[in-house]
Length: 343
Image 1: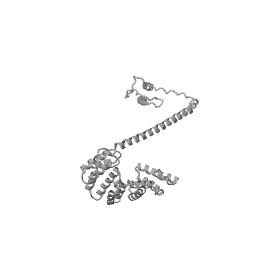
Image 2 (image 1 turned 180 degrees about the vertical axis):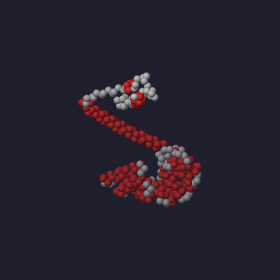
Image 3 (image 1 turned 90 degrees about the vertical axis):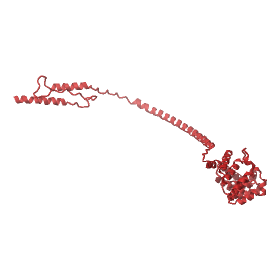
Image 4 (image 1 turned 120 degrees about the vertical axis):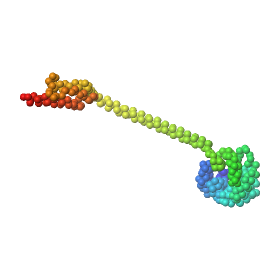
C-alpha cells in the first residue's frame, strides 16, 4: 500500500494513509459506517490508486452499499488485474437483486483462476443465488459437491461453509439436518464470524451463552473495579489525612481557650431528706396544735396518723401538704363550741 501511495504528493499521501488506517480500525471495532466515511475521503483524493479503490469497495460492501462497492471493485480489478474480488462482486450482484448476474460471474473464465479459498467462497455465493431464484434443492447440491464440506479439520472457510450448507438445508425444509450443521458451524466458528449460535438456538429453543464474551466483560469489570477501588482508596486516604490535619488544627485552637477559662466549682446538690423525716416533721406539727390525750372532745374523731410525704421529692421544691393539721384545727373548734355553750 505504501508503494502505491508514494505516487501522491507527500502531504496528500499522509492524509490518504491516515484515512485508510482509520477505516481499518473502524472495521475492527465493527463500525462499517464510520469506515465508509474514511474511505470516501481517501477515494476523493486518490481515486486512481488501486489499493484505495479496493479498500473503498470492500468497506462499501461491508456497509451494505452494494452498487458503490461493485463500481469500486470493478475499478480495482482493472487497475490491479486481480480476480480476487470476484466472490464479493458476485455477492454484490445478489445484494442488488440480480442473482442471474451472480451466477454468470461464477461461470466466467476468470473464476477458474481463483485459488481454493476463492473457489469455495464463490460456490457459497452461487448457492445463495440459487436460493434467490427459488432453487432450494439446487442450492443444497451446489455445496454438496465441495469435498471440503466433509473435512473435520478446521480451515479458514470451515465456519462459513458449514453455515451456508445449514442455511440451505433449513431453507429446503430439512430442519433436523440443518440443526446438526448449525451445531457443526458453531463449533468451527470460534471468532463469531457467523450467526450459527443464534440459528441453532432458534431451531432447538436452547439458550446459548457466549462464555468468551462474558469472560471478557468480567475482566473489563474487574479492571474497572480495581481502578475505581484504587482511586477511591487514594481519595479516602487524602480525606483521612485532611481530617487528621483539621483535627490537629482544631486541638491547637482549643488548648489556649481551655487554659484561659477557669473551672468553676460545682455546688453540691441539696441533700434529699428521707421520707421518714418528712413524716416525723408532719407528726410534730400535728402534736403541737392538738390537745393532750385523755381530754377527747365530745363527738370528736380520733386523730389520724400523719401521711407519709411523696417519696424522692424534697420539701425545698414541693410545699408540704398539711391537710391533717387542718383536720386537727377543725376538731379543736368543735371542742371549743360546747365549752362556750356551757359558759
